[in-house]
Length: 31
Image (cartoon, rainbow, N blue to C red; front, top):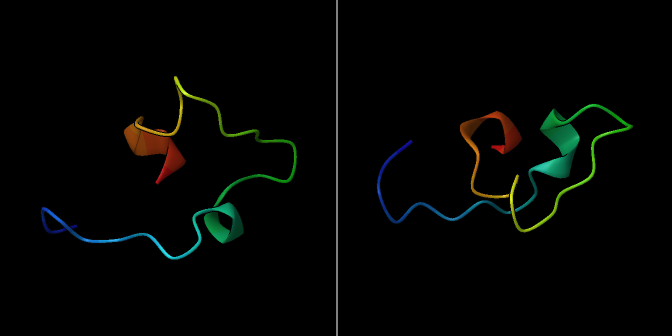
């Protein structure tokens, strides 16, 4: 992913039980 790229919706790529929060939203695993 290029710097400055905007994520329209990362939820589609996350497990259903995954919850984004201030700690994980910046984690590569949350992208």
